[in-house]
Image (tube, rainbow, N blue to C red; front, side, top):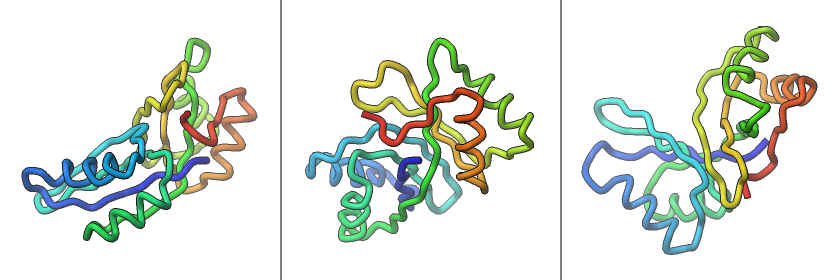
Length: 137
């Protein structure tokens, strides 16, 4: 498993830039991200190389940021997104959300996923031959 940072940001111009600028100025590398929104705010989910440090920094900058565990699965020539989702479905595992990540120097992309039962999901995926990553670099 890896750590994901979820950051709540206002829906207004420059909000995401404030997050990325703060991370960039501290040389914290963003390795994957997705955003979802509602009328008043958005949630920026990011994978960074130093998540706890990034959380402290963003808290100091006035953002509400939390770290969570997620599963990172290498997706390559043999492992496909369809195969990953089929394995979850056959094991009766519901995927709450998922997005792709790119990591520094990865030869393949990774699918970042969250389910209610992370340990069981990761164990099942490893048992079916998927490569679950501990970091994206």
